Image 1 (cartoon, rainbow, N blue to C red):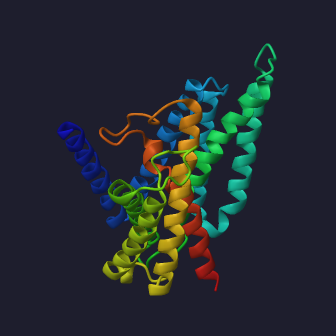
Image 2: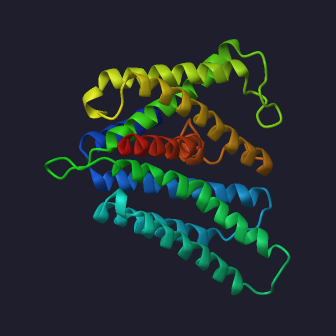
Amino acid sequence: MNSVFLSRLASTVVLWTVVCWVVFTANETGLFAFVGIMALVALAEFYRMLAAGGQPHFRLTGLLCGAGLLLYTGYALKSGGGAKAGDVEGVALAAVVVAILLRQLFRSPITPDAIPAVGNTLLGIGYVVVLFHFMNKIIYLTPLSESGMVTGQFYLLYLMVVTKFSDMGAYLTGTAIGRHPAIPHVSPNKTWEGFGGALVFSTLGSLGLLWLMASRLPLLNVSHAIALGLLLGFAAIIGDLVESVFKRSAGVKDSGRFLPGIGGALDLIDSLLFTAPLLFVYLYWLEQF
């Protein structure tokens, strides 16, 4: 138990040290590298789960397409800003679909699993890469500083803190007082008490970070912090449950062993896959109105 705790603590310290460094130094390369590495490792873990469950897919093609999608759309965001990247993202997604269909076209012989192979490969890219790419989109949602530095990375830090507060609240509350299973067919250990704790912790985390960093989060006020605390907390719960469905279907406990004491990269970002698009839409709406 002690060794597991120490491994988890060490992984957590290293991870948050890297996150804080790239955020507070506004290191664009570091931000893209962090998002890209986590997305591709998580995608590889997703395909590994498919393999464990006997599901057909094109692992190498999917990983190459995922990497290409991240690089191309990332370059579009950096060079043109978030407002001009939409068309580029659409073209990139179309190219990914065509590439995977071509992979199936040249696969011989044609077998009954052709459609599932294409669908599963695309599912991995959509579920992991496309959703996690909203982390990059958040960085460029707000205008650059007078010195040309990005400013949206502080909303990225806000996103990660609130999401992880939700995860922590669900675990601590569920462990301490959880008595009533919420969705036992998906995850027997998830309780209604844990869900309530997730929302309370995420809201407190949202308000706390706004209090600490109000000047870095100019789009938000107390009302927005409460609303986002609840919305992101709920989305984090859904993200965790969705991954639980995939793991249960594949018959695996963890997605991988990327982080000692924590588990796989997908285990780490599963809730962020749902909170990142939600925060992007919310902030985009605030900027428009």
